[in-house]
Every structure is written in C-alpha cells, then in structure tokens.
Amino acid sequence: MSDIVFTRTSGWIPGVIREGGELKLTLGAGADANHEPRTFAFSISEAHLAVIREDLARHLLLWSAVLPLCDAAGTRGRLDENAAAALLDPILLAAPADVDALFQRIRWDRSRLIAHGADIGLLERGQVYAAMRAATETSNAKRAQEYQADRRRAERGAVLGPLDAAILRFTGQYVHGATVPRRVPAAVDPRLLPEVMRVIATAEQACAGIRIGRDPRRGNRATDRRDWDRMETTVEAAVRRAHPELVDDAVRTVSFLMCSEAADRSRSTPVEDDEEAADHRADSGGSARKTVLLFTDDKGVEKKWLRESPRTAAAEFWEFVGHRSAADNEVFTIEDEEMGEGIQLHFYANSIARITTLRQGEGGSDPEYRVEYSLVDGMSGYRNLVSVFVRGGYAALEQHGPWISDVAEFERARRRRDAR
Image (tube, rainbow, N blue to C red; front, top):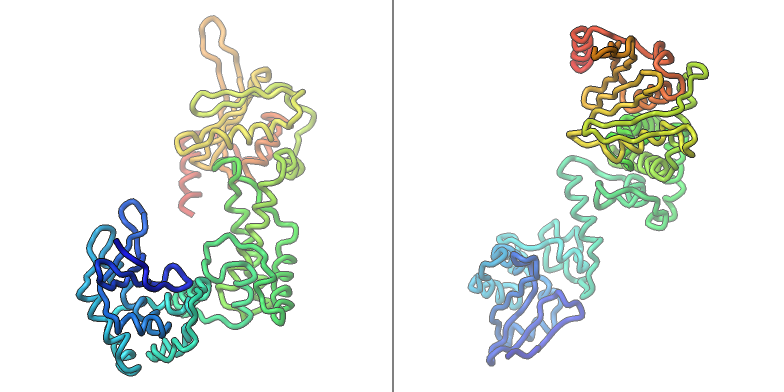
C-alpha cells in the first residue's frame, strides 16, 4: 500500500510516494512489450524530498538525469536503483558548480529540460543549473521539437535565417520536413508574413497552368510522379532566382506546398474532368468513335463500356486500371471486337501494342493479326494514346508512333531507352 506524498501539476514530472514507511521517487517512462507505460521507483530521503518540494529546477534536473536509466531498462529490465540513488545528492544537495560538473559526465535528457523552459544558450555552454532559473512546471513540447529540428539541421550544415524559419513555420514543416505542408499564416511573426507571402506568390506564378494528373497505375488516388517532379523543378528554380538568400530547406518546403496542393486538386477532380485535358490534347482521328469497348486486365477480369454510358470510355478505363492495377497485374487491354482492333498497355515496360485483325479465322484456322509496338513516355503518354484510340481507333494512332512490328527490334529500342 502506498500513499502519495508530493506531486506537481504536470503528471509526468516524478512524484514522491510513501510505501511501507519508505519514501520513493516514482516516475513513468518508456513502455513495456505491450506498449503500456512503465513505472519506476527508487528510495529517497526526507532531505531529498524537502528539496524536491521547494526547488523546481533541481527536481527537473533530477528527472532529466534519471530518464536515461529508465531507457536503459528497456521493455522489461529493472531500473538500476543504485545508479539512480547515486544521482540524488549531487543534483539535489550539491553546489551549482558541482551540478554543472556532474552533467558534463552523465547522460541526461536535454529535450525534457528545454520543454520546461530551460535557457538553450546556457545549456549549450554547460551552465545547466543557471539554465533552469526560468523553468516552468508546464511543458512546451513544441519548443523541444523545434530545438531537435534545429540540431538536425546544424548537423548537416543548414542554418536558417529569419525568413527561412518563417517560411517553414508557414508550411507547418519547421519541426518535421515529412509533414504534409499546409498554409498556417498564424504561425508566422506578423512582421515577416508579407515577405513570406511574396515568396509564396513567386511560387504560385511559376506553376500557374501546370497540373499534376492522376496515375491510375498506382491506384485511383495516386498522382503522376513526372508531373510532380516537373512542378517541383519549375517552382524551385523560380524561387531561387527571385529569392537567392533562401536556404534549400525553405525553397523545398515551398515547392512541396505547391505540389501537394496541386495533387489534392487533382484527387478531388471528377474523373471525367480529369480526362478532359487529355481528350483535348489527343487527335481524334476523324469520326471513328467507338460504340462498344471491352477492358481486360492480366488476371482475366473484364469490363464493358457502351457508348450510351454517362461517362467517357477513357474515364471508365482509367478507373478500371486504378481498381485493378498491382505489381503482378500490369497489362491492360482495350478491345473493339466489332472492328477487330485494340491496344494493349504494358505498364511494367512503359510500352504499348496496337493490334488489328487482318483475317478472321475460318474452318478452324487461327485469325491473323498485325501487332505493332511503341514506347510510351510516362502516364501522360498513356493518357494521350488511350484517348486517341477510343476516339479514332487503330488508324488514328499512326501519327503517334513510331510503331515497330519486329519484336527484336522493339526490344533493342526499349533497352536503349532504359539505358538512357
């Protein structure tokens, strides 16, 4: 049976209990094998309790020094109580200079002290005791996270200026560069916000008219990596030209913001609208619009499109691809059985085949086909060729070659392309 003797406002700061007549410092730290928090405790004296009650700075310093011992215990090990007890007098009862000297020799949790208001400059200079003069019971986790982010940048030689930092805060990426960026003007010092918005305006002007299309080969919500890379390159070049003082971290976060917003617009665009741009780019090849088309994948799954469908053939085909495409399902076909022609898309090879029936099979003989191959330049190339075929048929594809009928010759062309 234990009684609570002393706790602070924050439930995470170690408290003191009396158990079997003995005072113990108790704290939660780490987790067990089931990801449940672990609780550790070790004995202290009445003199230690008196300091813990009255001196927040020393209490926090003790916590910072004990936490590495808890980490060392892992998910199931025991706390080294002798090592923990050895910290009590040097931290709680020793002179400030001796406290500083101790923290030069032991492991301690710097981020914990920073979250509770420690002066970062003094900590960096080894004046640990003085750094805790402004300590608070309440914790500011964001302050510690930003400190760690700055240390990671310093390790790779990146130093942020005021505008760089303001841009990263505007996009919400100051702490974590992998966080999806967003616009957070309230996070920026109002004096710097106009400068930040000028940088954003430069990026917006640079990518005006550039879109990031969807890539059904990777799912119905995936976006075209090539489109993303093109927008990223365009934005970064424009921002660096107009604002050469910015560091790479700031430039990249702006391009990431522009690309993420463009990708979100693409994902929220109805499939028919998404196809419209490709249909306008495609040459219709005359009036040979299809009336019935059969879509198939490499697993034998079929879907039929009829002319009276409320959606375009291209839109329905790409939705079919988005639902069915996978690492082991990368060949898709569009067939016009009435005309005896079709196209086969080979996503694994960035290539396409157009097929037409030269002679129907008669008397048990096999039909005769003409098969020609062509290389495809990314998702935009596939979109264009599909739109051309569903609007104009086999013949309309002629000008979108070159088309190669010899398989060996085509493989050589593909290897040359891949080698580049």
